[in-house]
Length: 131
Image (cartoon, rainbow, N blue to C red; front, side, top):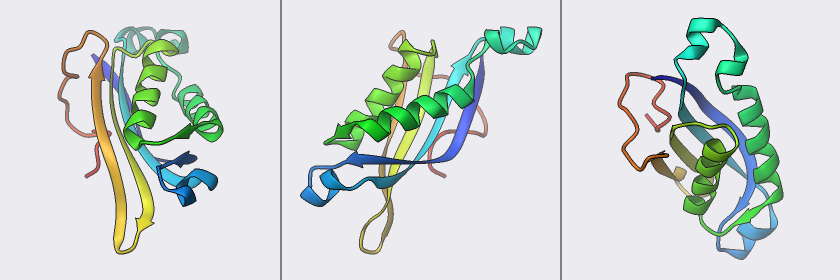
């Protein structure tokens, strides 16, 4: 199975339980990797794969309009979006709040899901996980 990765995607979102987090958008960094059909490489046709530009556009639009209490819930929302709208068979995702606490560069979560409930495959590079 082939995959696409997007590293260090910066978005603004309202996520958190503290009052200051609920009123102002804060910067997040997303790293995501998702499976795509092998047919994309075989036929050289965008219709056979997942258009990463559309994925990025949808994530930015949705996160810009919503409020999440937990970064974990935000992550599950992104995974479900990739499954339901784009047909990704599996997703690996890390999301980090940037500079949210004094003397802490990033705080975040890592999520791995496959549609069939199995573990997404291992592969070298483009991990979608913080390095």
